[in-house]
Image (tube, rainbow, N blue to C red; front, top):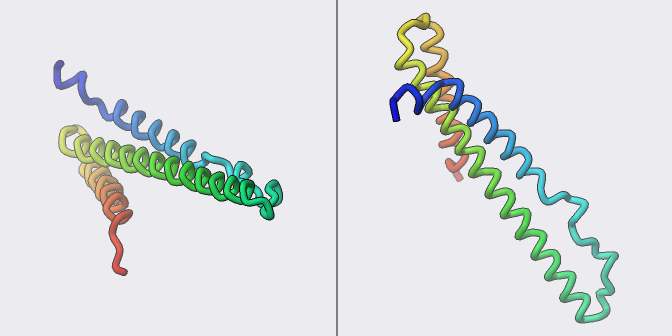
Length: 122
């Protein structure tokens, strides 16, 4: 493939934006209304009590799964956007210096937000 067809700023920007939308959708699932309600179970019966615990565990697993998928999509989108900003600032010599500096700063902000997700002082 030719270099020009592999990368365009608009393509990477749109893919990154689409991934952010998908991450937002994944973050909304499962709905809080689908959480098992304790009033739907007879906790005096050992079998139903165990079923309630199993349903809560399953729901928490779904929340963790969709949260992890949303985080992966968000980090991927921010990485693509940061890369697009850095690359565009380096390759497009026709832009004004202020625009190039702004793109580099935007890339730095995106990379810093990615690093900041897993950084903790405590």
